[in-house]
Image (cartoon, rainbow, N blue to C red; front, top):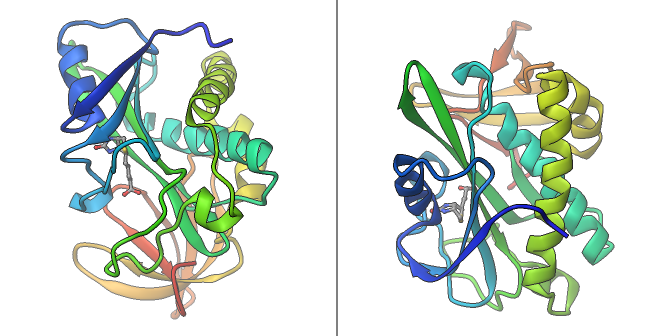
Length: 250
Ligand code: BTN
């Protein structure tokens, strides 16, 4: 059983926003906020995250890790491994990670993670790891051709509460290990084994430019190492980047 406090809401704007409010009230480390539906669910890169009632997992974890703010996004990668492991176990499917932290099944996105930092003074930050999993969703808008759910991909419905409980436990164990070693390096091999971008060509889109590059590695900070068409090797940070396969989502 999970040791941590899980707060359930029926309807919220966004569990990440509730989490921010709870941080301002100095809520306990590792508190988890879960909602049945979100009226203003947020995705990465300013996108909207559809969060219909009763069919998905919409949750946020609040952490105050004693590490540099610049390294906190590594915890999003840790959470993606934890959710991937949980869903693999429950569905018996080969779920993969599309860097940095989308979960993919049959080339479709079934879950995403939005990490947000909150300044808590004294040069310290809290991190809110917001996770959305499309569990039993039966249809998606036409504007979301790469989105799917566990139900649509597996043909059966899943127990959302079981997934939440198993994920929280899995993440707890991994977070304890992260705090012990204070580096993502201890999860790098596991992450690489789950990551579907390695060795592939990616279409990379930042605020200023778009280009294709070969993904050659992931380094110990969790950044993507790519080689562009002029053979220049460089690192990509997850912040403001969208990456796709050249022919589709992956
Ligand atoms: C993505 O774009 O892939 C990230 C999606 C993150 C969605 C989750 S749902 C729970 C939490 N609350 C939000 O408003 N967003 C995250």
